[in-house]
Structure formats: structure tokens, C-alpha cells
Length: 328
Ligand SMILES: [Zn+2]
Image (cartoon, rainbow, N blue to C red; front, side):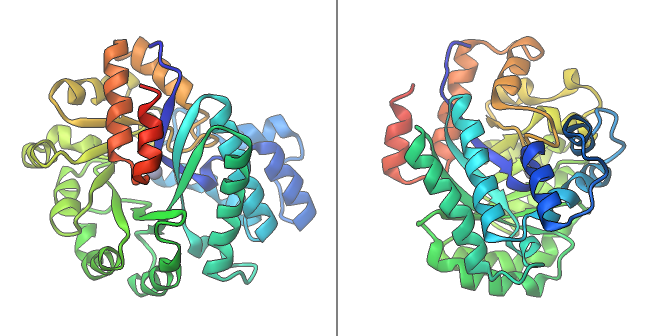
């Protein structure tokens, strides 16, 4: 794997905070901390390799979200994530986060998105990296809360916001509850990527594509055991945003050796490689690429294919895509 350039399409802002920054702002904002030692805090923020489930994994987000309630913090953490990415050769990233989680301090959706975009733009001015935002909604949130966010944020479409995502714990058949909300998102001009098939339900991938119109799927691991979903993903060239380290932590796969990424790649499925959460999963794109090489036996040519797939499946402008093609 000689290629240095990287593209990341699946990275949660709240799962990718620097522990030092969490410590600094928790003390400043009066948020209770389990420890004041930065190393111990880091260990606290990382989900253990033997994390029993996805819901246990998701608890790691509570503390970061508790501090991400002011414009200053939102701008700062977005900037730092871009900086961390740029330093390991990521040229383009789609950062996702849930605006509804950042209103405890009274910020509006517009203020929240503007602050995160400010951090992204600042990093773009300093480093050779570009970024866009994906707005996440959690599957347990009341569906009616989605519509006003979509409407308020639509002025940012194509100006830093590119897509909408559904994330969080996965129940079988969840797509049925989001048909109207996701149709509304599409109508307004948002692209659509959906977390599905992360923890056991291949049928959720099929439904996210057929009922919601997902253009990309977050994870999609479970299609390995669901022939119809597998065929649909393959035939429609639906791109999977795979996150191997995270998939072991959330029990999507038991062992890293069992991860289907290489098998999917060989079968002609469009696969991309991502971190999911840099802090909670204690990983980087560099680490994920090493895993591909050392555990899945991927060759340079396979990584080139992954980079190309990420590039073409990104929701970036044609100008950015053209720039990214220059790294091939
Ligand atoms: Zn995710």
C-alpha cells in the first residue's frame, strides 16, 4: 500500500474528539469528569475491544456531547478533527454529527452547523484537505423532530452540508418509520446514507435502499448472510462505508479475521474504508489501511480501488473530485 492519499466518508465528529480537548472544556464548562488524568480519560473514551454491544459502544459519546454545546467548542473540535485527518494524509472527509444533540446550551440548528463549518473552513485554509458535513439523526428520536432540522439546514446544502444519515441502535425493520422523513430530505436536495446491517439484520440494508433510497450504506456487514440484500447492493452499485475496527467493537463481527471487507471487494461490491470514530474506536485511516493489508491481505491495487470508489461515491463537488483524482 504505497498510496499516501486517503478519503474518509464515515466519521462521527462526537466520536473523534481529542481527550485533551474534552478535559479542557469539561473543566471550563463544569461538566463532571470520571478523571482529570488525560491518559485515564482517553481509556474511558475508547470502547473496549470486548465491548458487549453496540449500545454499550454508544455510551462513549455521552461525555463528548456534554461539552459540545457552545459555538466555540463545536468550531474547535471540527477544526481539530480536520487537522488530525490532514496530518495522516486524508485529503477529503465527510464528517457526520447530529445537530439535535447540541442544543442543550440553547444554540439553534443554524448556529450549530455554522460553527462546525467554521472549524472545517479554518482547517481547509491551513491544510491540503477538504471537508463536508452529513447531518445525522438517531433512530430512536421522534421522527417529527427530523423535519424542522432538514428545513432549517437546507440553506447549507452544497455549501458544506451534503447529506443526511440515520444512525444509532439498529432494530429490525427500522426503515418503515422513516419513509416520509427521508423522502422529504431527498426532495430538499440532500444525499442519503443510512447506517444499516451493522449488527445482524441484512434485510435492513435492503429496506434502506428500497424504502428510503439510500445511496450509500453505513457498514452493511450483515448482507453477508442475506442473499437478496447482497445482490441488491451489488447490482445497484450501492457503496458500503465499512469500518473494520469499529465493527469488532460493536460485535458486528466477532473477530477482525471474520470481517467480510476483502470478500466483498473480491465479489465486486463497492467498498470504502473508514474509521467510524477516531477516539471511541482508537483508530486512524492509517491503522485501518494497515489492517486491510496485514489481516485481509489487500494489495496496493485493492487500496487504489477503495480510494477510487470513495472518490466517486463521495458527495463532493466535481471540482473537489477532480482534485482528488490527482492523487491517484
Ligand atoms: Zn457510524
